[in-house]
Image 1 (cartoon, one colour):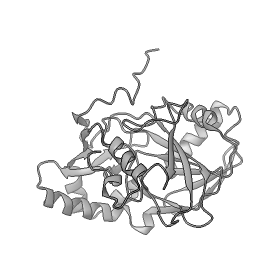
Image 2 (spheres, helix red, strand yellow):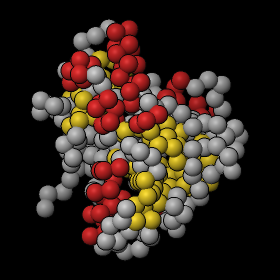
Image 3 (cartoon, helix red, strand yellow):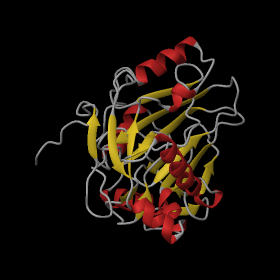
Amino acid sequence: MSTNNFDIQLVAGRIGAEIVGVDLSADLSDGIIGEIRKALVQYKVIFFRRQQLDANGQVAFARRFGQVTTAHPTVPSLPEHPEVLDLNYGRTVARANNWHTDVTFVDRPPLGSILRALVIPPSGGDTIWANSVTAYQDLPPHLRSLADQLWAVHSNAYDYAAAAVDLPKEVKAYRDVFTSTVYETIHPVVRVHPESGDRGLFIGGFVRQIRGLSPTESADIIRLLQSYVTRPENTVRWRWQVGDVAFWDNRATQHYAIADYGDQPRHVQRVTIAGDLPVSIDGKHSQVVKGDSSAYIPTLVAA
């Protein structure tokens, strides 16, 4: 498949496409940016091989799709680049080998994330993404009806980092920073995508409990729904190369960084684009329980 400006090569049947013929360091036209955005919404995660981007170029590309957030609500940014989250796995951060959607513990989770590969192990270190829209469509009607009614509490209080054991001192320090300010937000379990109108399961690793249910009941229901998200049919796996860029729709995906590379270095950097307030199928919005995310999501300037 192709557009007026680049080729699109599908990577998996339900999610994921490689964009061929685009130099992300170039001054891309509004038309090309519009076509990339259309591909992002359609394929949920798009890949660009062997790009020549630095941190400034990564941020500049992200800004073409919306307002860029600071690096993270609690974790410090890359020095001199307040928008860039530096992820040097095994050295300074715990590995994100847990299914999650980025920063869902705030009221306005990112629209999308852009990840750039600096150092990649010669074997291992792939990332898997899952399509939460097709997961919802796969639900039997009675489970879909149940999910439509549910709201979930998301929090960073027990992040994927906190579940790790025998962590190096540096990684333990990172975990403490990650949870230094506690955020909680109630989001609909089924979210309506603001651009496509599609319904998708909005859950993942930061969900702590279903509103109105016990922890045990919550865990059972989330486990059941999550099993549809992570079905192989709904996933795509990317084998990284240095210079690769992945851009995913954070409103319609989950992802998992596979920790199968031992002591080999793996270094990536992430920039996130500010998102909107999630909306349920009956038009209700997410609600903040704890934490002020205004420093993470700068206030929009009126035109």
